[in-house]
Structure formats: C-alpha cells, structure tokens
Length: 486
Ligand code: PHE
Image (cartoon, rainbow, N blue to C red):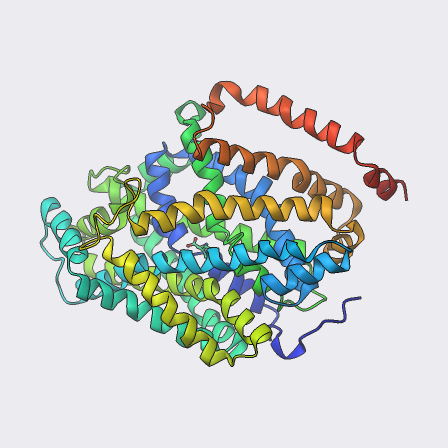
C-alpha cells in the first residue's frame, strides 16, 4: 500500500472532501456561465449534451485526478512525479502537474474579477443602487461598474484577500472549516430562490426551456462548448481536484465520491437554471443575453417583483459564496507546492502567491477599462486568460492525464487505488483510453479551427472513428491482454 501518508493534512470529517470538492466545482461556472450558455445554445438540447459530457468525460477524468492525488500524496507536480516514478516512467510527466498548477492560477486571476462583480452587485443591491433602473440603466450601471479601475480593482482585491486568508489558514482550519458552512448555506439559498421563482409566473416556461430536449436546436459550437464547460465546471485539469484528492483518506471510495461531486455539481447547475430562467421569462426578457444575464437581466427582473430586493440580496450572497469556495481551490495547488516542496510556511505561501496573483488579476481587471485595447490578436488580457485556460490548458492537461492513466502508468496502481468491480473498471478504462481523449481532441480541432466540425451530420462518422481506434488500440496493446487475462 501507499506509504506516503500525510496524516496531519487529511480532511477531518467524512464530508470534508465532498464538501470541498463540490465547493470547488460549484461556482460561477454553474450559476453565471451555465445558465447563459444554456440560453445561448438553445436550452434543453444543450443541457442534454452537457450531461453526457459530464458523465462520459468529466467523471472518468475526475476519478483519475483524485486517484493521482491520493496515490501521490502531494501537489500536482510532486504527486504526478511520484506516480510516474512508481511506474518506472520519466519524471518529465510532472510537466502535467506544472500545467495544472499554472492553469488554476491563471483561471483565478480572471475569476476574481467576475467574483468581484458579484460582490459589487451585492453592495449595489444593499445600498439601493439598482432600484428603479430601466433596461438602459442596467446596461449603463454594468458599464460604469467596469469603467472605474479603482472600484473594480478594489472588489477583485477584496476577493483575492479573502481567498488568501482562507487558504493561508490551512486545509482543515481554513478550507474545510469554511466550505462546511458556505456550501450548505449556498444550497439553502438557492433552494429559496427556486421557491421564489415558482411564484414568479414564469416557472413553467423556465422548466420547458431547460428540459425540452430538441436536439435539432444544437449547433456543433454548442456541443464543443458543452465539453469544454464540463472541464471547467468540474474544476478539472487545474490542480484543484488533484490537490484536494491528495488529502483524501485511504478508505474513501473514489468512484462514489466522484459521482457525488459530479451529481451535486450538475444538480446545482440545473437548480441555478430553475432559479434564473423563470424570473427572466416572467419579465419578458431574453434568455440568450450572454454574460450579462446575471448582472443586467436578472437584477432588472428582480426590480419589478415583490420582495425583489430581498431575493436579489440572497442571490448575490449565494453567488459570492459559490465563487469563494471555488477560488480557494484554484490556488491550493500552488500553496501546497510552495509549502511542501519549497518548505515555505502556508501563510507565507498564500500571501506570496496572492501578490503575484493580484498583479496578474489587475491586468485582467484593467481589460474592462483603461486596458481595453491592450490586445493581441484582438483579445485583451482577460480574454486571453479565459481562452488559454478553457480552450487550451484544460483540454491539453485533461488529455495528458487520460493518456497517462490509460497507457503510461502500471495498471495495477490505479486499479488498486480505484478499487472498482471489474465491470466498472473496464468501463472506466475504456472511457479513459478512448472516449475521453477523442472527445478532447475534438475540442482542440474545433477551437484551433483545424477542421469544420458539424456534429449534427458527422456524429456517425466520429462514432466509427472511436470504434476503429479502440479496436486498433487494444489489438496493438499487449499489456491489456495480460491484464485481463490474469
Ligand atoms: N468549477 C468552478 C466553477 O464552476 C471553476 C473552477 C475551475 C474551479 C477550475 C477550480 C478550478 O465556477
């Protein structure tokens, strides 16, 4: 068995990992991005494909990450290096750990800006700054909020400081302690929001929008967006889940915890849809408003409803908490690495990385005002951080990890870590070796514009490709025969 235990740094409670990992997964991705993407890509059809991506790609990859973390007992860089060595492979695989850590860091540097929007809207709601605003006013308020680098920067700095405070306190006293009240609290608030939405007069329409699976409405763009979002929303390939997994006790079932986290994340995304769309429809607003949906359309809707301000307050408190339980997980990989590998105290590691983060996030924040035209290939800093992480680093890191788990490591290692019944293990291995990598390669082909993907008409063709590479892969892989033969 694994001897590299760090008993002082394991989750304390039975729910420690599940709450922390769900807290990481549930965030702006669920409440801000998922609803507006669903709106843009045609409702139920997008939801269906998204669910498929979560369970066919997201779940197997999350299992890999938790297994890597627990087996390697360390930050992504150290854990992956140890695993590669244990299988007699090159320590160079730890490059994947570097990529993940840097990816988490980069995501956080633009995430704090959006989280800052949430905090500033909470403040606006409480101070009455949104009352009586018309459609035009709302757009103007959103613009004005972005236009002032001092206030916008103050909000994202606040998010950075809170994040670093929590992470600096440590795994149990900082992260576990805070997610233990924030997560349940945020779910209760979301429940209250749905209750409110039920009486908004648009509930039926909202439900129909989310769950009418009209597959014809889905574009190939939507399909690939769904796959990319599956990575983002489950916090994959960014060091978060892997590092949290490194604190998981040996006797927890990886499959069960993964399913719980993925299921909860999905339920929260759907709940967010159920809380938001009815209010949008009841007020005759457009569900496909894009990124402004939460900050322009929703407050507008609340303005015209009874007790709107109360519920708007609850909404932004919930959104801010969801953002914080995610932001802490993005920096944990870096802090764990500085602490364990470099011997820097946790508090110093947190503040040190916080300062670097603050500098980069300030550049991202300036993209909304004075830095709007500091662009490269017509993308500003904020856009680049978003693009490089979700379109490039996450899929590439995910691909690397599936290949490493599927073909590079000794099979016994992950087999014993996952401890699945044979059927489950074979299914997992098949997903990890063929289905997930092919899915990820497709995202790449699409985002790099290498080929005109049209899933509507090409899906039978791609299914053929999947079958062909799996048959070929298994025939060419003598290790597999041995493994199942024995
Ligand atoms: N999953 C988070 C969300 O949906 C975002 C995230 C990405 C968190 C990567 C950690 C790491 O908002």
